[in-house]
Length: 196
Image 1 (cartoon, helix red, strand yellow):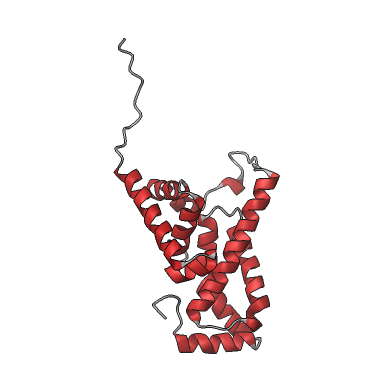
Image 2 (spheres, one colour; image 1 turned 30 degrees about the vertical axis):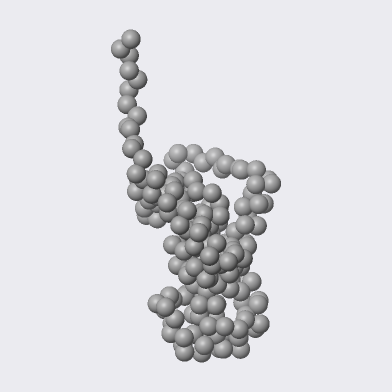
């Protein structure tokens, strides 16, 4: 294994066999090793309920676990293939139904921001997210899977059903596009010029 996840190949094989035999501790270990990255990917790609989506993903993973064959990297690809499909389904459903906005009073306690909300609102992260989301969908998916999900090019190719060469090309184009946007001079918006 190339440093991804928290288990070695031997440990993964043991955990996988135990999970396939129905051991709850092993299923918990698989969840702990992969769910945070799935939730982060879902949130970064715009899921309204990343925790719910992550739960749905793992219900599907555990449902299909008996038929899975492979090592830790293949399992990571397997998990993110399911996550990607579930996310696409969520985005399609939301697109068909249209966007809804919940109105909450300013002093409503549900409106109080958490530390996580505060962190995601920081300017640097917001700008990075805005830059990435401005990319074409295929480039954005590749970057999110490479950076947020920490998948290899080969794993991304499996998830997106593309050739590794196509994934590399999409990544290269995405990074070039981001570099150009970052290098573009930014002019601050100031007061309108009244000198006519």
